[in-house]
Length: 247
Ligand code: BTN
Image (cartoon, rainbow, N blue to C red; front, side):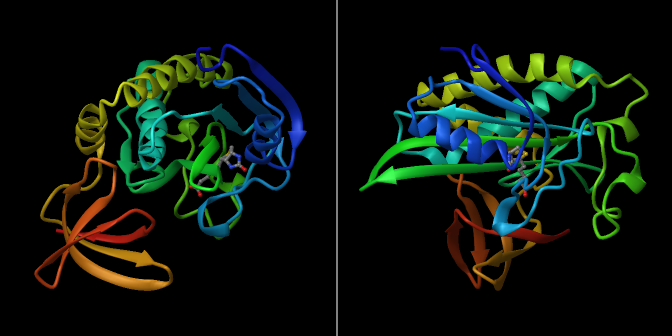
């Protein structure tokens, strides 16, 4: 089934990712999208919360049963689809910050949370969650986020319609997920690097399991891992957060 062929619309839930997970465990079809007007306990990466007030953002999760093992590419797939949908709707090219963020002039416009479940080493399902700030005024964000977050409304004069955005996001997700299923990781990596806020040679600081790691960015590997040269040795990271980027 195509992504968004089955759309479950919810007025309010704790987290669309949690709801999608329950539905996946009950056997809901691949490509089902759960979209909520608000989340009362929206989840971000690294155990953070995702601020999800009613009617201000797009909060959705996609149920997937990926047949491939290289699922570390899925957050990149979602980022590329969201970037493409934003460009199609507003002619704005947002930046991709590995692995989960979409940025506009350094501020966070959207985030991705990909959660997967395994039985032994077999993946049972993946839930790809996307949260996009749509119509927040700056003062709508909690004070601690105001300096780092932004919404589409603040960066485009075009009227922002969440529904229209969702309509272009689903086919974009379907195209990029299709490339993933076909094993076209090279296309995914190339496109992500093209849209990335990072370019090879930049000095990067990562937070890896609470520890800072500094190095020079060298690119992404074929599974979407971030390659950093640290003290003359190349290291690949799959789960880390970029905390600073310098020339
Ligand atoms: C991040 O921290 O950048 C990831 C944010 C992901 C938020 C989305 S909103 C829809 C889905 N449901 C959740 O609880 N989280 C994701």
